[in-house]
Image (cartoon, rainbow, N blue to C red; front, side, top):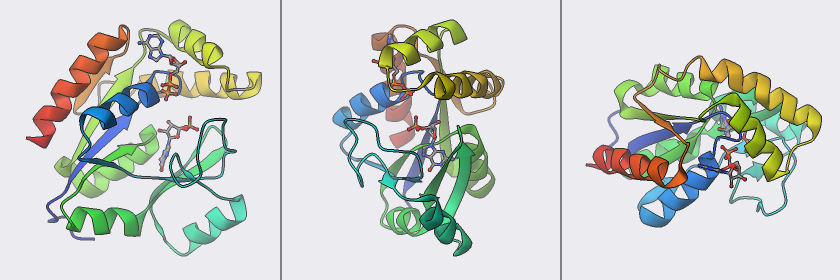
Length: 190
Ligand code: ADP
Ligand code: 5GP
């Protein structure tokens, strides 16, 4: 894949439950130019999600076959499910000069930084605290107790990396956090 392609990459990384989807939804409304990469995942579809829009929901066998054919730019096992970014989608869109928005976990973000370097603009979004994160995850009502505990354990680990990326936002007050995000994205898109 050519790293000289003219497109731009924005990666948003945040522990599950921080408010990343909420913020990304607003960002897409305000910046229709941003193209969201649709990842592949083996997790089950949630109410309100659409196959091919939120993710491509695939079986573990299909995912592993794609992985063995080297079809992923990066992949990771997150909260017990596989997630991966399609190589062909990203290379084609970057060559076309698109601004692509990625929603990745920390492992995927590290792979992107290794591959794209400064071309990948990474924004870490942190919750005000793990306690607030837990309240948000419980309030969302989408996770089993087991899945919630896995997400909280992973969150504690991901938060250790919060100062390692290009930008950081704390999602305490949603309006302020969104304003910060909008300012950062405006700067990146230049
Ligand atoms: P993520 O995509 O990071 O897992 P969501 O966007 O689904 O998180 O947000 C988790 C829950 O927290 C949702 O119910 C959402 O409405 C709520 N939420 C998001 N941001 C805030 C905020 N700043 N204050 C209070 N609740 C929030
Ligand atoms: P969720 O199941 O809540 O939608 O996402 C769980 C986690 O997987 C989030 O941290 C999200 O950023 C991450 N994720 C989603 N798609 C990908 C992907 O393609 N690659 C990687 N590495 N992580 C992803």
